[in-house]
Picture 1 (cartoon, rainbow, N blue to C red):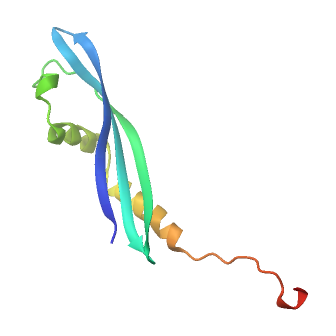
Picture 2 (picture 1 turned 120 degrees about the horizontal axis):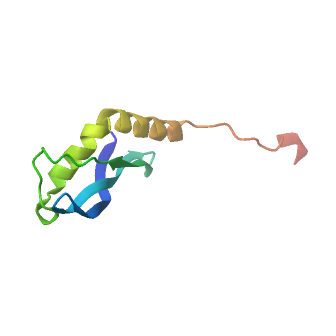
Length: 109
């Protein structure tokens, strides 16, 4: 069974915007999948950037007060979490397929 782990790799912010400081505009995220298979681990990952738009009428959280859960909520509003994990699972499953290899003919050794 594949285990998925989501990461926030970086955040970019506009230093000042409409009287607010450090307004987050970009969140770089990554999802990793790992599955134990045939005595080893198969790894795959997917990453992206979520662009955020400032809305002065919405609640604003100061940068220093942001939580990981809040930032992930922004990511999951823009990224289909299930679709990302399904794509990673497909990449892992593709690595499990045993592909034939060419061998030297036994009588030509």
